[in-house]
Length: 387
Image 1 (cartoon, rainbow, N blue to C red):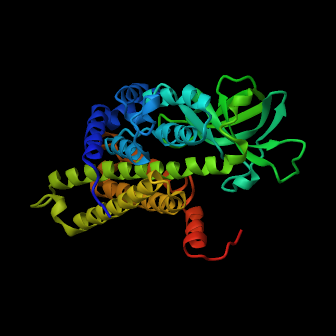
Image 2: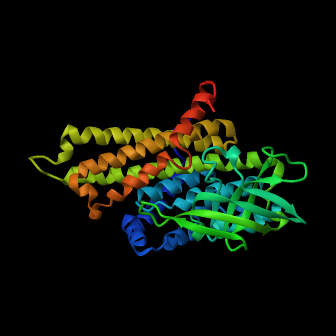
């Protein structure tokens, strides 16, 4: 088993981190305060090919895997300017279309993903379904050669920046019975008639916003259905594993950013005779945070390697574990960094206070740690299911 990354992956990380440092946390803070977006960073990353590293070469991408895209995500976060929409657009949507889309869907969408000119949101969560995907009520019914799609979604990221949303719904036809509708994925343009959205006010400082979606008999052509309606569950899981891998990478990068700030502060801040980093009360928590981040990173790399090797079942277990470990490690690193800085940890100048709420999200989304524990208990340990 190889525990080192390729020279190409290492070079990719270095180049992306340098791009991230060009913008940094201060750029993100300015965008939040002004109500702006991260278009400059996104567009430059796209032109450099970083957002399309996992897109097949025949469509203009880098031909790499989810491990390469996860490295890009982690390094931007470690530089203080993580792009949340990376977890969704190139990871979930692009992957699903590349693996299961029709030839025409691949030609239509993948070149844009490769260049970063296309952004697509992903809509699965519903107000009354939560973690129970079996309760999804967004429904498509046939309308001539096309579809009519109706329903609601909640906590959908980046809709205001997206060209379209990949919606997880269910298909109703003359053979369907209540509770037995087939799951299906649809690509819905954000300017479609009957498609509206409303921003959810959040106590999180981020240029990436969350939205409620309303679909009121949205008329869609036949080719809005992604791939085959009979493969929808496979298609969905093909996107959810990369989502967990990317969420883990985002969290690890955030933790690295916080830890790097804390270490630098501990090396230079002097209150008594030596810098505060010489004291074990400061040094040991920082070392503990470093260990946690590195362990989470190894599991994330394992999950990416399994996924890229085509082992979807193995990747599912590892991706869930990676996301769990990364969330806990990120929260720990941010907390330790704030504590190391003392009062300065909450001063805007140091760029850590806003990470307290931001890092906390990683325990909740895109899947809660409780649901991950359920998954591991039932699938890894073989314990009975309670729900």
